[in-house]
Length: 436
Ligand code: NAD
Image (cartoon, rainbow, N blue to C red; front, top):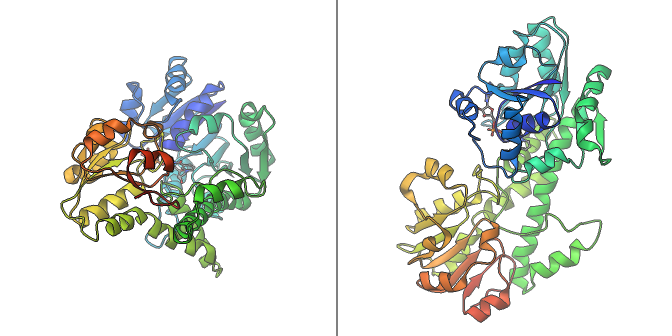
């Protein structure tokens, strides 16, 4: 099938590449010409494990190409995916200007029936708004379908190729058939394509992300309580996770949720609810707890250094909002950096993939190390912010040789407490006993 994907970010590029992988003929279009040129030169603009192989294979086999010309991209396409940004507007609601603007541009170009699929995360009622844009700007028949994306950065290719489920919101039988045909190869193992109306589909995405953000936040609160009452959150996590109704996943406490999705989606759902006079109060609590949790590690540091962080030098391991990505949007590391710099501390950071992105944002307000051990050289303490695998079993002798004193603040609970006792560290993690 001939497909166009508008927007080649984390979602658009993965969607386009993975759709090409099953034999479709995909053209991806982006307004960022530099990005398009890069991709046409064979460079992938993001870090996403597993994407490279598929990207090169499908370009070589001429099923995947890139352009900045919308007309060229959609000319013969049967289905047009919109994978455009929906950032938070000033009032917290999702900014639909990219999606509605692209719809208007597409409407001015099409001459035959199209299915236009919203992959971006958009509030309830957006399919109606997009349909209205088409009605106002073209007489060509268009079905607007909601097809929210559930991929996780870091495992995006796997998530797209083998989704737990595909949600499709449409009341058009014609569009439904095309979507069924397109997604068939991805659900061969029996996972469902769940068809529903557009509004339910749009809300499904927000409900999923808000539920997950709530689950993490709940565990962060349990962890904070554990510290006050002398319990161990790892034990509590295992104790509750064994209950099938709760499940083992997404129960790890840490330095708060970040990323390009959870913060904006929780905010947008709360805002959508308030627009229909519904006070979705649990989401307001989730947001305020998360604000505090993002800097909980700085609170721990203030206590340890008796409020005096001025002139202290800290090694920071991890900048990305989670491992296996270079994405730093709303990353807790950025908030921790700001707090520490305000207190007059110095930071030397190391992250396997995200340093370039942080450099663009923070410039030389912090230093960047060539590897994890260079970061700890002469540092007063090590702070762990992202749970990259390479930080899990480091060479503690090399850490000890670099650090001025054996002090670790671990926002991801990477190390065994007994190991920290044996190595003689001051070790402060989340929801567990502090080793002094
Ligand atoms: P992104 O910012 O990485 O990418 C968006 C791309 O769209 C950019 O390359 C930008 O240049 C391009 N663009 C902007 N305006 C354009 C236009 N008019 N025409 C063509 N291209 C244009 O965004 P993303 O992370 O891929 O997210 C896209 C949407 O998917 C958002 O609504 C997001 O909430 C949702 N989503 C994201 C994830 C994720 O993990 N990143 C997961 C699920 C859903």
